[in-house]
Image (cartoon, rainbow, N blue to C red; front, top):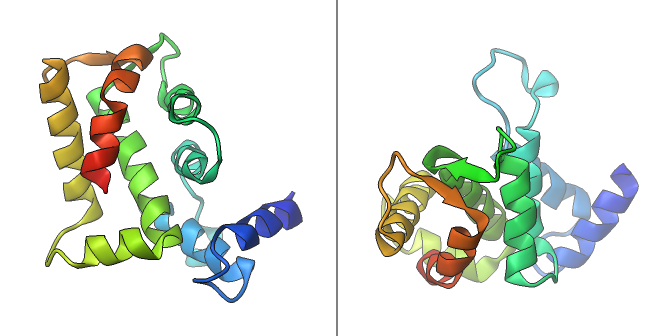
Length: 156
């Protein structure tokens, strides 16, 4: 599985990274769970967030990408995600995008002092406003797909 993962990654960002392993390390480092005191070799990634972010790299339609990410982050399995889970989805996508896309990284770095988390919060706030929801609301997949284009424009 590791070899196929690295081969897949090598096709994703040939122009930016010399080896797939370099890209794999960069991606892994974006999703490390810093809430533990483990040494770096014992750190674990937040799996669902990591996979949700990697969905961005597929050639699937946006609705399919969102459905996979949505299912991974719907911790209760009730078909609704919280605003916090929505934030995790957006942040996961931003983390992968800024590592795998030179254009996205350049745009992100062009805004002084901007943190990915702040950008994710702004995107979530705009999407909630577009849907007429509050931070205590729950979001269905249909609602998410409804504002997906707006979310992607804000992310760009």
